[in-house]
Image (cartoon, rainbow, N blue to C red; front, side):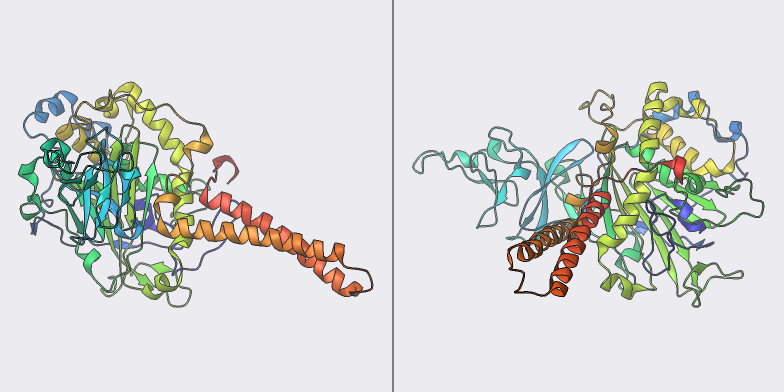
Length: 535
């Protein structure tokens, strides 16, 4: 299952049989040796320029993969990455409710995403009412389709213009037309069923979509592919998230028992770690192209890590294996991750794994079923990465390649990302002075690995499932009490012993089922710890 090594968040595939290890581990997918092939990417309608060679020699020593820091610092000024001249994914449309405004943070900016029914478009505003700075995301959409601040009732149209100030006299000056009464509007667009935002509300960027579009990935617009999406807020920063997705070597260890990997020729340990032949083929300000023994991947700065696979499915047992000669062209799988910088120590992951086989399964199996496994995989290395980020901050992000010992080819993409990050971004995200650079305090483990606020409330499928299962739990408890009550108040000669025994048995079953369901809900929608020592 080499393709899954491309990311720790690849999850239980609905079209592949799984097996269960124990009570705390979910079923694991059986992918083997998937061969990746990189499709054409376009940026602004033209072919990407990410295909020239960075280095023809394999990365094998510390000296060859660690760029001299003085050179990095010298080159930063030549071509600087502008974080505010990029498109950022905000949320999948499938997880947005048109009836309410949604508060989101991207690149340190507080945004409100809402559906403007008058223009039939998703709009992205500054999440601040100009009156007293209350969050508009806590407001509502009024009966005329305007975004209303619920603090004092100010209403705004799709262009950010104030439509009404209830406190202003009708016969007085039209203070709602003043420029200071308007809300800042960020350019936005829906592409690949995802709302994207341009993080600069200056009027000169109002029509930026006509000049520069979000990175285009053809497979996401191909109707023959299944494209279930998911999202989760992550309690570690953008840099750590991106490099973790590029690191297949950690999969047999951090996700042991959750993801099945290919058995190496020479097995040196229980987990089955092995040498990986990986290299960066090209690196420039737009990202880089990676090559692995299982195929190719592409980092499109700043948000997208994409791997593409052609796979052959074993019809007998349903597992995916690679063809020894050439993969069949009609079966393809893509692994797409969108990593959004939110604030220091916080990021957001949007994922989708398009495939053109087993598509029917996604139409009958609820999306939340797949998210259970995906969240468990995210949880299994979450604490490791949260602590790792703090250690990196102690030494300084630009000193990463001096402090970390990365002598093997398996770290090539991680080193490639750090090179890009240091060379073009100066080793830091530009927060426009909004943050001091310090990370937020580490919360208790249960809060750190919380699923409800980081995923469930932001996922329409999981939120609906959690509410439905919670209601079923209550119904089972009520049934248990009712059955016991009936037996207790019924006179002995009115019902037979057999009926009483049956009703008591049903009451016990209902009570036991409610307790099991409560445990299931807590484990899968709230908090599931992962102890690596016992797997």
